[in-house]
Image (tube, rainbow, N blue to C red):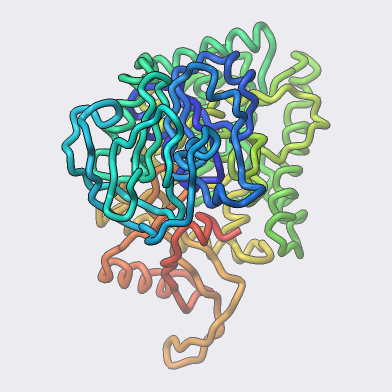
Length: 510
């Protein structure tokens, strides 16, 4: 595989996704992973990501210097390019001119990572520092008017550095550069094919579980559904699925998911109506993290009660979760320096259960999960439903969760999604949903003054969930959606459209 060492880059996941798209397994590791640990793994190449630090700062991140002696090809990107030069004896300095955005790169020779590329390439820069002196044995391979060593290489040791970002779409032939690195320099094998990934997950699950039984919670989202289907393929009826009606689901979702599971042979399906319990425990709670914790703990309580008899009969050992790769990063689950952004519902379950956690999707991105789901034969209407958080509508209501607010939000959200589908806009969007703000505003309806809730609509475009841009819904469609919500949903007199990117915002409101 290819190892991406993360120096705090917002693009680390994008690098990993690009390499996977080229057919090679890729995992992200903290920048300070010991060289000995990398040596023990079957690694074809290493990529140093960019990062916000400057190598001129005393406490800026550095990789283990032993990595340079492993004989494994390395590609340094932006900060990774600079830290490689600095540690190997070159010199980095503040650039006279900073470069941000598209630049024309002058390639000196169509070879190495620039094989089959032209001598003038459009690339994307984002840097202030730059390499001003190369380490011994290295040669400059590309430049711009403001950056003499925009790329360098040591052909003998197969070490390369580039000041620009090949992983972003603004670099016209960035995919080719990465392809040259992983196949020409690293001689990696193309083995990351969804069909084989699926087979490996099923085989690994079967080997790990043995003859034991597994418990899985179905939230209604794509991740838990695909995870449950994979495990069911691996161990059959030794999988015990718990579908909890928390009262926090989208309109009609519980019936639709339960119908799918029963139709596809999930004989050990435990459907539990826990709406009142969740509402009672969430009463008066306004803090987002506290809501997430309560929802997670309540799930555990419901699971324990729902399968008490099964636990006695089968001594269930494993608890399966639909955790995907970005979940682990956002919850600082890789052991690196990532800041904790939020507690994920499917990572917040307490250890008191005594189960071994089973996470078949833990190394996958959302689009890969969907591709596996397609290969497994899951219905598209479930598989391509927009992402839905484990805590459900509980974190799409800003502030206290009540029955009234849930009823209002469910109806508003259903109208929003229905109109997006009718207009054939739904499939163009990564995620769209309505959120209810616990604020009221004055309005006029039927010549009378109203004082009712505000609904915020959010629709975003994304590839890997780590960054997102707001989706440009046509104004006439937004107007139609707003009119329907205000007209048909009692308790709402104002509709807002959220145009915040991620970062600085997040996908969800809480």
